[in-house]
Length: 347
Image (cartoon, rainbow, N blue to C red; front, side, top):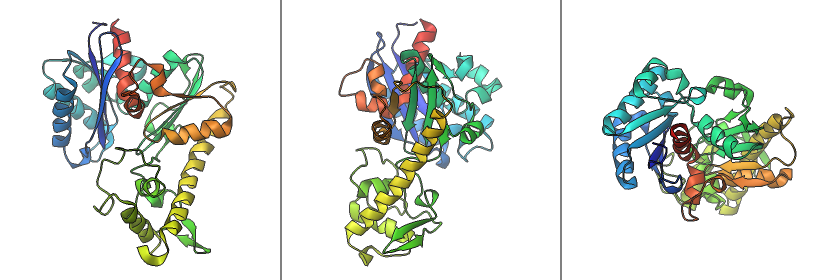
């Protein structure tokens, strides 16, 4: 079984990511699809069928998830069970194993009896893969919605938190990303036209607008509708940003909106870097330990490593893949990691 083709899945609340590893463990393809799970399970059903067909199917599938937390479900245990049911229904002829962190992989029946071990374990899948390939590292995964910061020491994951609540408290999970984070979550006020101007507590704009204005938004990263349902252009992003401070687009030239965007991006960078400094202060990692970066926002992790004077490795460098697929490997690290881990478990 360890030499079979494997498809790994990372089922999130906003996206589904899938990666196919060939019989030698090389990454053949990685695909991400928008999946607004909070709007209904039919979105997941469609994504599973579509991505599985595009990847060519597999007799063995490995799954990790965070989608159980969306408000479609009354609680996470229900969410885990319903997601497991959806995958089992849509992949009826395959062997499916669900990642449960320290417990390894479970079948669907065991998942229903022990949902807490499966809930939001995708960070652990990525970190466990990194730990198997790199003895000491700070793993930084900056995605569209969240940022994971995980120390690896001596080939072991040394996270203090195990679930979302404890990871938030430890600073290892930050609810900030480069696409979906509402700007009101970044700051209460910002400098504009020589004054400190409060930001409105309204969902007028997101971080995708900031990075689009600054020409830093990776291609394909923004897969969901904008806050106002409008265009994904520099002008439209500037208009949405202007609304955040009660202005119209023509209040200043576009350079003024870029200055505001740059200030807010720096606020987000400082939050991530402060959390990294907190982790380094534990004294676990030697100075030569690299920063391993993943996620669509990993360019921020690269900047942090350079500013901190630490070596930096891309997640894709830790697994065999072609240059063409490497960016998607790093974009979708948990899907790749869980596929690799299930191969190791079945070797």
